[in-house]
Amino acid sequence: MPDRRMLLSSVAGLGLIAAWKWLGFSGPVQAAGKFEIEKTPEEWKRALTPEQYYILREHGTERPYSSPLNNEHRKGIFSCAGCDLPLYSSDTKFESGTGWPSFYDHLPDAIGTSVDRTLGFARTEVHCRRCGGHLGHVFEDGPKPTGLRYCMDGLALRFEPANPAPS
Image 1 (cartoon, rainbow, N blue to C red):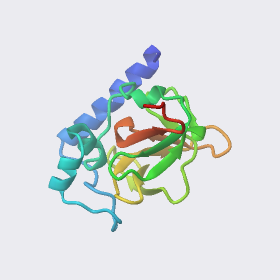
Image 2: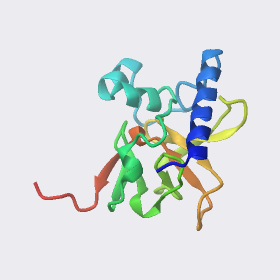
Image 3: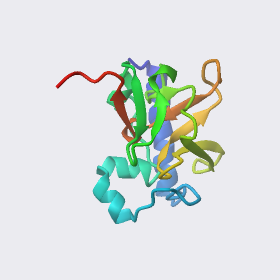
Image 4: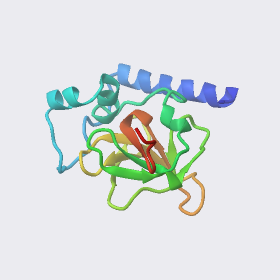
């Protein structure tokens, strides 16, 4: 459960993002470069929910503590919701207290990064290396062994349990 300070700082952060976008500033619509999977905006809109499209294709974010994946503790793989590329192992997931699923490392050849200046300062954006979908950001305040915190939007991910329940 979030404490009051974390909740207030999350609300303030989302307010800053909304104000920044309202003033006409926004980030790139897509990560720079060519990707193995490229679709038109209309094709992405048909393949994704409106919320997933907002996050993956328009660099949006979900409300903190709103993703069921934040509380996902089973063994398995977290993949890109846009193209199903495996991105993170549950072995690297940890409780960051931020309200978003967090990982201290990614799978090999899974992600790309770029500089995001949408809030007026530089952050490192994380995107899927195969489709370019926006996943979240990486920060240098994570646990050992990497010291990194990959703070991901849960709607940008799909979870596949290692041992799915028999049907």
